[in-house]
Image (cartoon, rainbow over all chains, first blue to last red; front, side, top):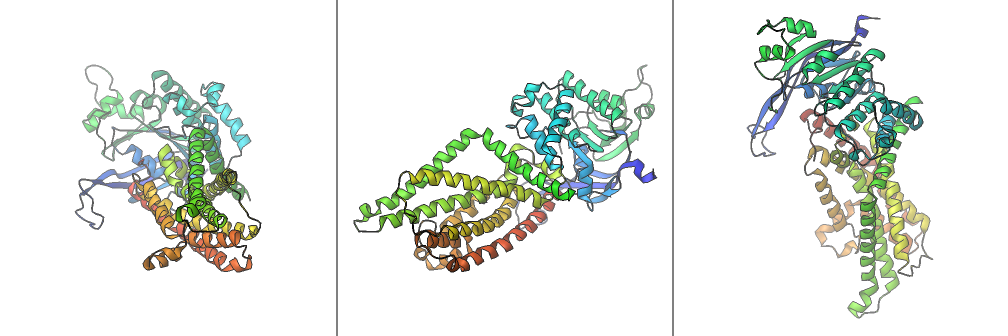
Length: 277
Length: 274
């Protein structure tokens, strides 16, 4: 295997900024129009190896989701480049889309449809036939603990945890080799969180999938990730294995430093801050 | 070949998904159908009552058919236009827009699926309304050129698909109010296209606008075919104009949509829900 094939995802100097409204908008004015630029992602460079589970930690508004959206071809970076298994996300968008799937913090579904109908719809978009999709969907949904009866009931009647499991099943159904998990366990109860984490572990151990996981959850990051980048105000402030990151910080109060200690030390902030950009 | 099968499957995904949604929103569908039938009947009864209102002898059967063709053709074209233009609006309401835009399908495939659904749904809906209205009136179509009227409807569909694609850009660019903006386009077309009256009664300055609307040609052609039994050959002028509008509007709509999609991806508007 060539060195290039070992790299699942390469992010080179990616920058993304948005114009945030700061008053009344006048369409005919281009400058000084009540807008100020907000840098969401600031010259981020990363390489993720094939088969790796790579974590991105950061507070709300640190640029995690913006970066994931750039990888998922949903946002165009202002500067820099992103390659997925050697394919440029801008020049070879369709090839990249074939290789990836994403689970976001909001389980985005047609809520009146059943999990099975949603999954068959998703599978058809990725070129799968209904029969193949139905068999695979049943297998994955049952593996995730959904009762057979729930599979054929509207999504709106399911808890958020169950909906999130269906979202993971939908992403897994298309067998992506790069799976983008954007805060998949945020807002889930402990049991649902544990089940989702177990499924990610199973994916890591049994399938040829590279996983990019963004999270607020320190324990989750430590348990699942081979390496972790800490993102703050759009910039990578540290990148290492969980053990390597902890080694960056001195022992405090007689106990081993935690990832949260590392984050506090490097950024001077709490991990979950209500600061939305 | 494999790519073609994938694209057909992906197009069908939209047809199946939309019919599944129609099934789940059956209560709303019944209300909408009842409203459409009542609306068509009300307009057609204007024809039935014109003689009584004016006290003048008129060909009531002709007047009823004139108004009925207007209301049914407009209903069909409006349903096609709405469903195509709501391509983005539906996804915004449901919060699925990012998932659909991340899928490895071309936007043309996406549009083909939504358009197929629109055509089938529009025909079914309009057929049911026609069936119900026929129970109330003695409709005489013995002189009608049915083939000609069918061809007019097909050609008219093409042009309205093109307009629908152009209008679908609105909810992409304006997440909060884009869907409502498409209603303005629809209202303007209704005003100038001679749906319930000949365009000759419009003020002089509005009549050139009527000639820009494809609905004008569809309605004139349909009335000529169904009411006057005009031959298909005599409809070729209007058919040609409609096909030309469709041939220009569909690729133009796709090109405009691609630019709007790029803009939405540059500014982060895909994420925002309306």
